[in-house]
Amino acid sequence: MGKAIILKSPAEIEIMQEANQIVAETLEMLREHIYPGQSTLQLDHLAEKFSIQLGGIPAFKGYRGFPASLCVSINEQVVHGIPSKKVLLKEGDIISIDFGIKYRGFYGDAAVTIPVGTINPEKARLLKVTEESLYIGIEKARSGNRVNDISKAVQQHVEKHNFSVVRQFVGHGIGSNLHEAPEIPNYSRKERTPKLLPGMVLAIEPMVNIGTHEVTVLRDGWTVITSDKSSSAHFEHSVAITEDEPIILSKKS
Image 1 (tube, rainbow, N blue to C red):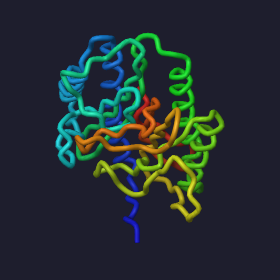
Image 2 (spheres, rainbow, N blue to C red):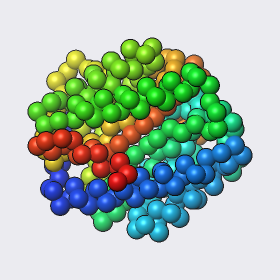
Image 3 (tube, rainbow, N blue to C red):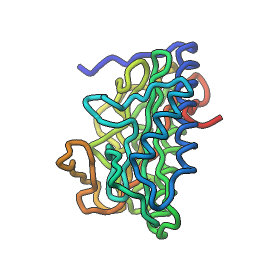
């Protein structure tokens, strides 16, 4: 039997919106610091200091032993890249930044992939299609639909553009725990998936590769890369299901 899905009250969703605004503001701040020669460790320090000033507690640092506040993944790295003073951004890179915080007992979580300077057309198309697939998935995050409606919409859009969606890592519910039920895959599954109900909050996060969907975890035990070393992009929003339109909690207001 799977874990129970925890519905949030309107007051709890309001707190989660405040939490996610801290995440959104932090990601927006980091954009100004993405340039060739920048170290990923410096980005981590900036995010940690900035989010604490806004009242948040970085959520990833120490989570299951992760050593940093940001997950920073470059080019063929898919997710969970570890910031380092030895890793410097280069012109033409793409950098995926995943960030979460805890605020008043609830979590916020979002991710974005950002170009470093000028990137080649294929990487630019990857970023465009991945972000589009996130919003197409969010459009299906409506009461009465099922999780698979989100998954199917993401997968169809990605594969229409001849990219692939990662299977091994998925989105998730979020609330007073960083990871809650249900899982939100970015590919369609045959089994019956949970029905979406008002009060659910979901972290929808397509991870899209130019080549194969298969991934490998490096020896550091965290960094996930594409098995064929093709580039990967990652966009994520935390979304509340309501009686009406889905609310993107992590979209900067």
